[in-house]
Amino acid sequence: MAEGDNIALRADKLAIRRGARELFHDLSFVVRAGEYVEVRGANGAGKTSLLRALAGFLKPSAGQIHFDAAEEPALALHYLGHLNGLKGSASVSAHLRYWSGLFGVSSSLEQSAARLGLMALRDLPARVLSQGQQRRLALARLLIAPRPIWLLDEPAASLDGAGRTLIGELVDSHRQRGGLAIAAVHEPLGPTAHASVILA
Amino acid sequence: MSAFWSTFKRDFALMWSAGGGVVAPLGFFLGAAALVPLAMGPAHDALAAAGPPLLWVAAAFAVLATIERLFQADLEDGSLDQMLLSSAPLELIVLAKGLALWCAIGAPIALAAAPVAIALQASPSLVPAIVVSVALGMGGFVGAGLTGAALTASVKRGSVLIALIVMPFFAPPIIFGSAVASSGFGAAFLLLAGCALAYLVLGTFAAAAALRLQAE
Image 1 (cartoon, rainbow over the protein chains, first blue to last red):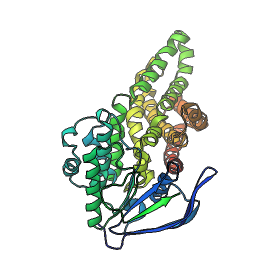
Image 2 (cartoon, chains in turn green, blue; image 1 turned 135 degrees about the vertical axis):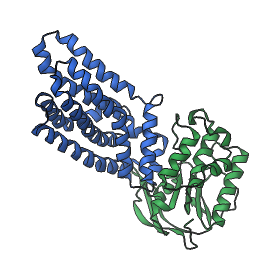
Image 3 (cartoon, chains in turn purple, yellow; image 1 turned 120 degrees about the horizontal axis):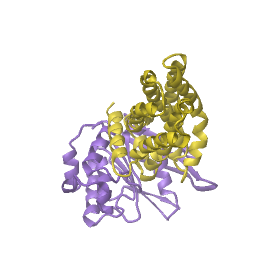
Image 4 (cartoon, helix red, strand yellow; image 1 turned 45 degrees about the vertical axis):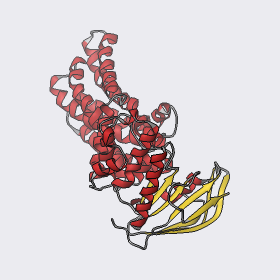
């Protein structure tokens, strides 16, 4: 993994506007290697927009985002959104193979599948998986391609108790390897958050 | 290159799987070609004159019929976000999807153009030129279609909009292609080839730019 100790993500006086409405402004924070930050706020406060801006999908209306990473931002980060990015007719293992190609890695797909409890489901098409199983499959992207920055939008959505614990463990081991994670959550995830960004 | 081939393999497989809908355009093409002689009657001369243009129009519509969901599905299920984080540039991913579409519907329709051309009273000596030119023309249609599909990815039932955007660009390949069908390899064929290549390259870049805006 190309993660050094100097990975950091800085938001500087960030403002995001959706349509005519300004979601927030003057938002500044720094997340460093090994840190896990939770983004909190009411529905519509701009949690998803903030994560999408950090991922580079959405242009902030003011302010800047800096990455201290060896790779360019799009190659240094994972984005896990509300949508799982699955194709109903493709099998679990076809998804894993596709992502390893898309992210340009050759890691052990079996290992990632086993970690998320997907081994028994390998040959099933994604459309027959339950919501929670589909979420687990989407989480496999985080393991297939090691990237230092994780942006997670409601990562525990539709997961059972064991699944929530699993995400906590994944985030913890990610931090120990020197990665950083930012998650938009309503309920705290397992690991103790280093800090919280509250969107009013 | 692995992101390119992974995307190609995935899209090609999805196009043939249930609901992928590549069989429908081929059926549409063959069906249209089979109905024309029935509608026009057996008059050899009229059929020979109208056949090649009709063949080209049917091929163009077959592309229009499939292109709508090409990026819309990726936008709706979140796959587009992951493409933006790929190790390869988005342009390459778009090109892979275009190539998959060409292999799934372009090549079969080009091959089907041979029996269709004969059924429409084309001279047998022109059939090789017709097959090659339809294959090229389908590349051009796909190139233009990529841009239309990317621009309308977030529009529900956007097929009419795609048609309006893309139709003007379909005109040159249809004109050159119909000329090839009556004159064989020649100046019209070279113009068609140039046109198809330009569409494929420009369409790829334009589609990638449009998709980046859609991700907002």
